Image (tube, rainbow, N blue to C red; front, side):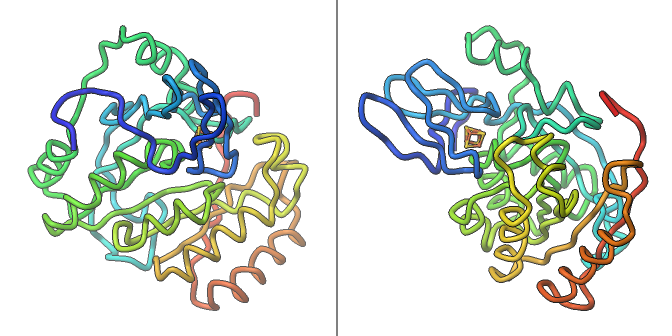
Amino acid sequence: MTEQYQLVETRLQEKLDNGTTRCHLCLWRCKIGHGQRGFCQAHVNRNGTLYNLSYGILSSIDIDFIEEKPVKHYRPGTKVMSVGSFGCSFRCGGCHNLDISWGVEALDDLAKGQSTEVWVSPQKLVDAAIRAGVQGIAFTYSEPAVWLEYVLDVCELAHRAGLYTVYVSNSYVTDEALELLVGQVDVLCSDIKSLSDDFYKDICRPARVEQVLASIKKAHELGIHVETRTNIIPGKNDDPDEHYRIACWIRDNLGADSPWHITRFFPAYKL
Ligand code: SF4
């Protein structure tokens, strides 16, 4: 683990011909040439090696009850320190965290070496959580896969300190990345935004419903406690027939007692 800000090698990268690299953290599986960044903007290729720009860079930090994540069947009544960085694998039209999820300015500054963002080591974050009296740390606000290097280092130290860990995801995540979460992440709370490929195409061109569902099922099969959420957006995913099909999928794949959270949409960004 590093003691000051520096580029950290991307955990799941494949070195290709001519100095290009492929990132396998999320299902974009971006092919990235020297000097270029992936879709999330948080990974940069420098001379044939891929690096995470956002290791230890926090965009947000807050303290919540675990029920607000939302998670209902894991350590109810306990509190988590919620943290997020910059960059995301989706571009949701109703995003509430636009400055964070796009994070273009912050990530540009980091790429140019001109950032003034505060750097927080994994140990400092865990120490802060203990001081705050919380029982867990939650990675949220944008997709945690885009800074998985930091997430995994924090999880390891958090467990050693007796804290649990929560990963709030869009589940556009590779099997390889999910396998790295085993033993590190206790709870995965994932969106099932819709069962319509057109809905996903709107926010993430290549994403398909079956990929998202397969990723959620895989996390469950890996033994991670999984809960799901659908945020109902009027006119977009408010068909009761679709909700019935989501409920049936959860019952058949995650179990009849698996919690599914239906949340109210609050207008934001383009919606
Ligand atoms: S995390 Fe996803 S979007 Fe970002 S570089 Fe890797 S594959 Fe691309």
